[in-house]
Image: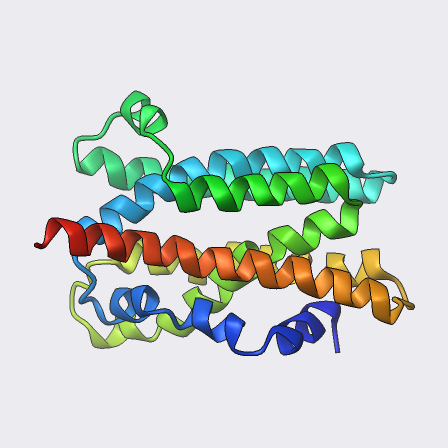
Length: 223
């Protein structure tokens, strides 16, 4: 069993609350209102800017060439991911400058600064555990939703699902799982494991809050 799976087991339903959130379910079956998805995607772009900063911090925290190379690879994956956001928002008439100038919402700020804070006050493993729910969770969601692309003609969110179900992203997620195991080594004390569980749980709950933020927006504009 890997550290990731141990952490996932330790937080119980918090993980499925995130990966099977109503936002994800609606996105998968194609019923998610476009305005909710648009609101989410703009915020997710702003999230990725801060997430990229956090991955850059893993390079600073690294002590070996292997970990520095892993930081570079992870950062490249995030930068590549932002291209999806730019393509889709440009179709809605949002320019790159407008996208970057959009205000961050509360859940966006809370999650991204939490991850950065974990990296600043903790070690490299703390930071990677805080980053893990996003990278690994999106791969899990992408793989789970991909079958819908074959059953729903002209799926409105096919491009998003395909990005996270892609071999490139799935490989990056597997590398993240392996990196956690390498950083953890063969022996983690019970106390250290509990510390990592607390970080992982908080980051996972913030992922759920990020989905919910978009649904709350949709509810407010639908009144």
